[in-house]
Length: 285
Image (cartoon, rainbow, N blue to C red; front, side, top):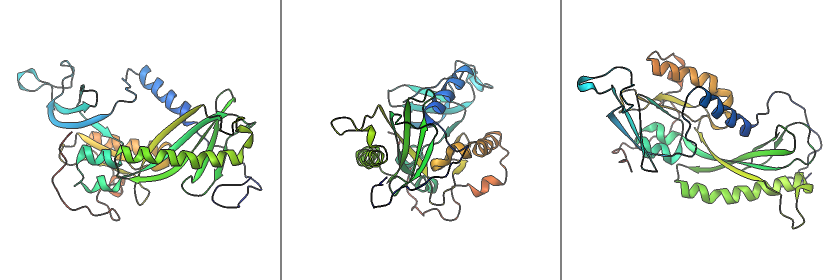
């Protein structure tokens, strides 16, 4: 079966158990589990800016109170829809332009965490009975194919388009090109998925921005200027699920004020990160 960008063909495969993760069902299950625990999940909400040192307006339910009956100072999150949220501490997992915007491009860690575009297409199952992992050329990288629970659909995820620290508009412009490459590859692998008009029968399209670092290791540290109340845990690239247990323990240590030595290797100023000249932090939008 031909692959885009060359005359290579798939002549064989190695079956490997235990690697496939259906990211669609995983995200749904995590959101449901959090809701069961009483955690409010706001899908699609975007933080416009951070305002440190503000009272945590939680109706007086925050831990401890200062003078005048105010809860302990926290961090105020300003959302795109004009609403505000307050929290004692927050963890930021984004990268690229958003990290620059929230914490200031002058911080070295912001420049180290760039964006890679990821793409997932949902299509009818052409007859697969188990997941596949297919190695392709850039910008697709490894194509992961997983099945829906009932086996009627497949989710094909891939893509390493590199918008760097560019804004959301630049990233959006690259999605069209990335999807075109992915659809050509899928049609080459499964020609039976083409409709009568020659177009793939795509049921759903999902795009993600994978925060990645030059050395492939995440950044896990307290952000400067927020008295330890704002933590950054970003840069896991495509290994977020695999790295999650270790990253979660490091974040917990930072929240508790007892970081382990492993946190030093993941600090934002470690060797290998690009130098960014000092300048005034970006003002909140």
